[in-house]
Image (cartoon, rainbow, N blue to C red; front, side, top):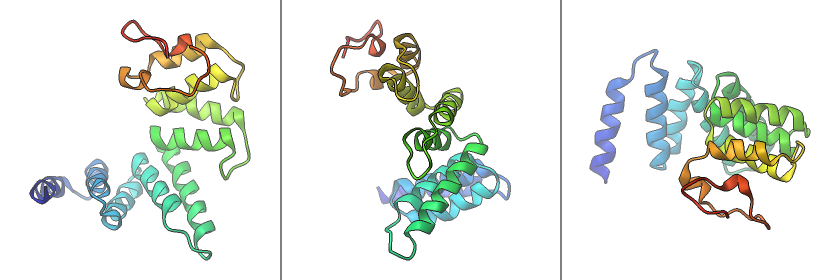
Length: 185
C-alpha cells in the first residue's frame, strides 16, 4: 500500500509544472484520499491560484470541517464559503452544487431558493451527479419549486444506475426514480 502511494505520488510529481493546475489538483486529491490533509491543502491552494474550481471546493471543505475553536470557527466558515463561491466562478460542478444547496436550505447564507435552484441547474450543466439528485428530489417534493414529477424524472434519468438504486426516504413509489433496468423504489 505504501509502495502504491509512493509510485502514484512520484507519477503526479513528474507532471507538475508552474502552470499545470490539473496535475496540482490531482496530487492534492491523492494526498487528501490518503489522509495527508496538510499536503493536500498546499497543492489545492496552488491549483486554486491557477483557477482550478474543484481545488477551491476541497479547500472549502477543509475550512468547513477543520476542528473549530472559539477563535477560528467563524473565520473558517467564512473562508469555506469564499472558496465555494470562487470554485463556482471557476465552473466547478462540486462547488456550484454545494453553493446551490447552501442557498436553497439557508446553510450560513440567507435562504434564496431561486438562486439555489439556479445554481443547482448550473451544476447539472457542469455534469454534477449530486445536483441531478438534488433537483430530482426538489421537483418531487416541491422544495424551492412547484412539484413537477416530469421534471423530477428528467433529472433522475441523468443519474447513474447505481445511484437510482439508492434507497430514498420517500413514502410513496415515485415514477422519477425508475428506468428500464430498475424497479420503483
